Length: 608
Image (cartoon, rainbow, N blue to C red; front, top):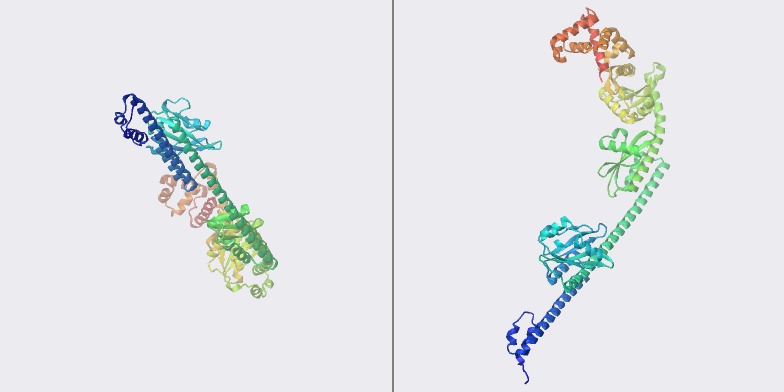
């Protein structure tokens, strides 16, 4: 007897085998003879598994093809890697999927893209070399998986990595390498929060996505390297063009400066040519104009022989001739940024400025000799030397009737010429007289004249300078005031002053008393206060300070004790001892006057 199966049942079984959703097979098999039920059920389920596998394979291929199309239109690497991880996550069906990039230099893996993670710290996690499942994948260049990471013994563990995995709740992990030739550039991971044995199909699918991710990363690296090379080429081209332009400007400056030297140009012409070529503002400064940050920069430039930064965008270069500072060029950046070529150009311009300055100095030196002769003639005792001196001075552009103050300057002999050089640019008439520099100015205030001359010479010679000013009315008075100022210059060192600007009138009592010899001060002190000075030296006493305080406080023992912070009886005992040493008449008016002057002189002499 032949068994028959209804057509509707056969069609239903075939539809069930190809259906995407699970349907009730047993209800259809009730219409089938019993002896065929088991076989038909097995075949239907086998066909359904095969159909499901092919359907899933089609989805995987579609996802891979979609990734390939996106790869061909690569724009944003991070976005594309994110999509690859997302598709792998959906198709493999794991709880977490992430991609780690391999650093060939440090041998570390860094998590670059994740999906399904909870802890924000997981993104960017770094795996040290030789640690965990990831290092196995990198070392052997093939997939590795574990159904239970905590119990894995095939690779070393790291406490920080184990903590990150535990915080995320990951249990089973599968890692496949991202390969570019033989080079590992990363690892793609699929992970579950339960124990799971990964099938060959899952490993194959994840490997396919890893191959796409490897292409993305390698392409991105090549594009980045290409862009870096292009940027470097562009920078090199720009630098070359700037260097050529700078050399052309330097050549232009060199040509202009050569012309200036040959045609007898002046210092300010150098600043003009330099500013025109470097398209910046250039200021020529004299030694007396240097102060603040500019002075510090010029000092650095003077020591190094190179441009020095004075302020943001401002450079200074010293103009020197041997040890002599002639001034400086101050350059303020304009259209052109200052590079090595521009700075060297400025340094050469400073040398040309010094050359022109020396050339001009040679002419001025001759002029100065004439002016020095005028000073000598003015101060000479010989009447014949002053014949027509007003006319001779006018021929040099000097109006003697306008001169109102004279300043006598004391500097070391080796610096005297430098002092004259500094003053001849600013003072009306400068010369040398009896080992001193004498400057005549139109300033009506001798104190201001003295301060100006002191500042000018100090900047030039960088040594202690004594400048004593005096006002004069005519040629006869001039000689008297020069003598008075010279006497003051000689007496000041005995009073502890070696670097100062004063007037002769301020120290008139001392010059009147001791005239031209500072040795007379010492002799006077020894004659008037000798016993007191000797007592203090021998007994480490305080008699002289007590006398000074006593005289300064109107001879009041109480006020003196208060000023010295001692008891009144102590003051009286010291005064009694001083009286024994000086004599009973030491407080007589005439004697007291001489003692008062001597005490004041001794106090000044001992002042720092």
